[in-house]
Amino acid sequence: MGEAGFVGILSVDLQLPASSSLKQKRKHLRRLKAALVKRFACSVAEVDHHDLWQRTRLTLALVETDASEAEARVQDASRAIHADPEFVVLGESRDLVEGAGEFAGTWGSG
Image 1 (cartoon, rainbow, N blue to C red):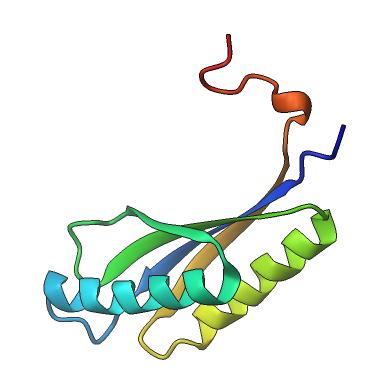
Image 2 (cartoon, rainbow, N blue to C red):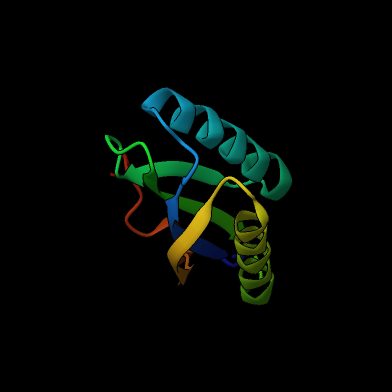
């Protein structure tokens, strides 16, 4: 059967120095998340610092059939986040996970 593919994961700790409220933070995050989803066909979620108005942690996940392509897209997404003037990148981590073949351990299988 076919290959299972690769999941590229990028987690980024961000500061929003100009943000003065949670409402303002959410506005900037909505814009950034929508741009990342549109440009990189990925999933993005705020995963930490929900109650702080000048900090956040985003995690992005994308899927490719080729490991090098997944790595390149994660790199491009990182560059896009670093280039956004509303955010200061405090740290990031990247991971590449190979998908399980033959639907091993899928939910609902039985």
